[in-house]
Image (cartoon, rainbow, N blue to C red; front, side):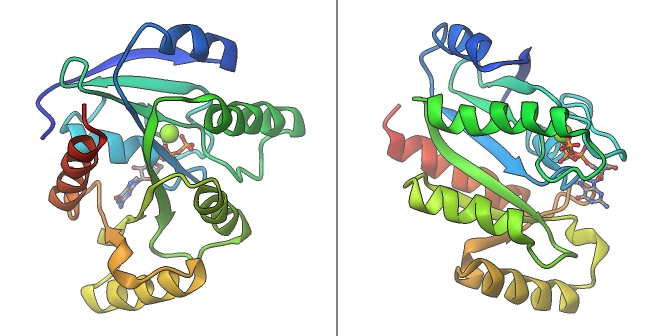
Length: 201
Ligand SMILES: Nc1nc2c(ncn2[C@@H]2O[C@H](COP(=O)(O)OP(=O)(O)OP(=O)(O)O)[C@@H](O)[C@H]2O)c(=O)[nH]1
Ligand SMILES: [Mg+2]
């Protein structure tokens, strides 16, 4: 259950992340995925706060690592910059990937990742890379297909099978979500409750 949500801080580099994360003792759950897939909107949907995380129709909006406190120290939601933003400069892309890759290697508090893919697109090489990275690193994750409202129910079913096939997971491992309609919200919250419970905090 999410009772309260509060923005903590935006962090531009790993060093700041390490300093900041030393200040809290609770687990982290992060939201990863391609630029514009709907990570920040996903956080807003979960917390029921439309403007908590900044969203934008222009890809590449989230350039920093953003931390949100959930339920007064129960866990931290981490909003990551998206990958695969074609229009970004090489220097920017390097900076963001240093930050996101670095986050995954440095964090000692991450207990789960929500890996987001756009329901309308077949997962690309970067999406596949993200999933195999998480899998090989032994990092527990859940796949959420965002923007389900853009497709009919029949199309959603088909898309879910396509995504499952491309990412080599069972269809039941993909939760369909929509920040517009709230579809999938209860399922995600239920998953979070289980994750927190089994993490023993
Ligand atoms: N129809 C629909 N639009 C969505 C949904 N989720 C996000 N969007 C739209 O998609 C665009 C990108 O959303 P963001 O939440 O900013 O995406 P992001 O993944 O945080 O993007 P970056 O921070 O740039 O990596 C915005 O215009 C959102 O309104 C959804 O579930 N349904
Ligand atoms: Mg964002």
